[in-house]
Image 1 (cartoon, helix red, strand yellow):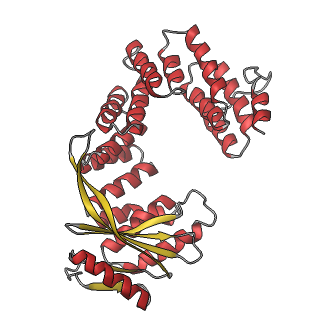
Image 2: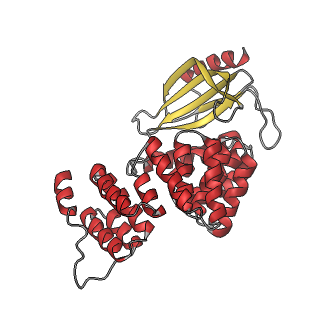
Length: 361
């Protein structure tokens, strides 16, 4: 089938007479509808009509990449670049088809040719992000927003890099700037909610996440469930877990397991996960020690789970959690409290007893 597709797109740059040129949005819809060949032809026609339309070029490249025809498209854009070596557009477009040093070189050349070509700054930001060089990524995303303040996608990733580097307040501020321009920017909404969760501001996080869950945006469920647990508010957590399990039957993008709670102490961390596609609705409790290590990119001390001390999987639709430290919203101590969704069963009591012993060490 792949070869049929490739043969059909070999003649992409022949413009059909008497037919209007479709917009990028129309072509994207064709692709979503599964009409890939028609979409490729439409991109070809649009590029012929508007050679400087960068969104058309990007869409066409992405479509060809999905079709597994990346080598032919690389040759195609190399020829365009060789014919226009001083074009920042074609340096950028060729670069985004490449990898590693060649990608970086092409994007830098595009900036050298035109310091206002914001797509090249954005591309470098993505390149450094993918290589976990967050400080460099942040610089180029910020440069992109300086050149074009309305470049909301770049500002969203600037916020994400601030979050990854631990500057939660800046991340929240950057996402707020995005949402001030485009209130319905769903990735910015989700990012801001996760940042609030990281600060322990669970109510603010849920104010954002709950409307997203009502709209059945599956990515909002996991952080919302964690917020409910952090507030010892188990009833909506049960409902959210149940709804996500039901959605997973038809939405393949939903992962097979989610983290439903994280319990931290000075020396240990317990991570509770649910296997949402398992017929047995398995739950997994993992207890780790903390590890302190230096982040080579950001030069800061980072705590992360280290040695796995204990792991238990249980078969039940209920979840029981022990919190050794912390307080609920009404100020009641959570230490030694065991919260059960439906009932206490012996297997959970044994799990929690073991976990409690580890958390006390």
